[in-house]
Length: 387
Image 1: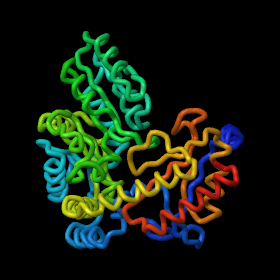
Image 2: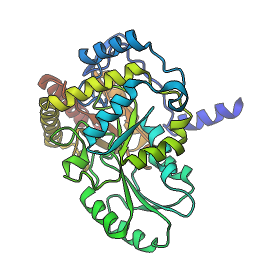
Image 3: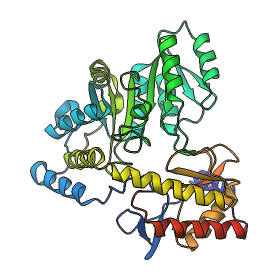
Image 4: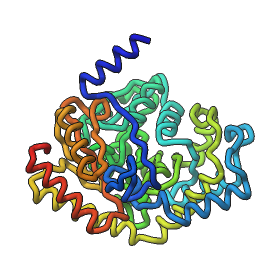
């Protein structure tokens, strides 16, 4: 056991040890931590749906009809009518032939990538892709070529050098979760078509947020039908849980047969599927939530910049405040907590060395007074030398 203590001590000394914080209230723009109400400024619940009464109602009604647990994996006896209905809804939402549910975004990426690429294939991955993409690439046993962040010229060089591969798959986040910038999707689509490569987009942070109907970055750029694999999650803007792959019917059939994280996992509870469909109804029928989200984003970013606080290349409701040093970032997060704002410190290995940050996110459920309060506190930290 001493080796664990040594490792924990090393993490502590490097300011990289992580600890869990218990949120005692329902997740929302205001939460309770240690009996104290605080402003939530780091949730991925962009549209504020996690506590929405329609999601609660749908989940409760589904439990009355189906019970809670699924009892088995989808290929054994765990597939319910709600799984199939949600998959049909997601395929229509993403404008694809079919969709397949996974239990999380991590399970989706580590299940999809090894199912479609293996020995003799080449994967091209953006240097700032999410850890689940990186791990999916590692599990695939394909050759992995990493291109510089959003660098289309570098990606093209790697495509040109890998013509002999059996299959080439470009994998990118749609929205990069720690920087809040957007992938150059039109350029990647053009490269995939020019070089005969497949393209996979992880749209976890874009679905529900981008697009006239909330369909995500593919819809936003008008590229429906030109992206081979779309991964999305239900636990962020949709306020539920789980993830999915959307694409051709052949893709989904292949995943059913080859994706280990799908085959060997107990199916999502039917109540989760019902809540997710309720969230889909809201996302598709209430665009005002996205309008408010983007208004809050602009208000927050413009005010931060007016205070002299840099927000990097953020183009989305994810707004990083990069500090660099892990110890200073922890200190800033602790000060925010002291002043009534919950915003976590993000440190390596989640981000690169010397790129530690406070990753803030706005929600459509933030009131103007919430944004104003947050700006006053960040301005105070700036004046006190914490930012």
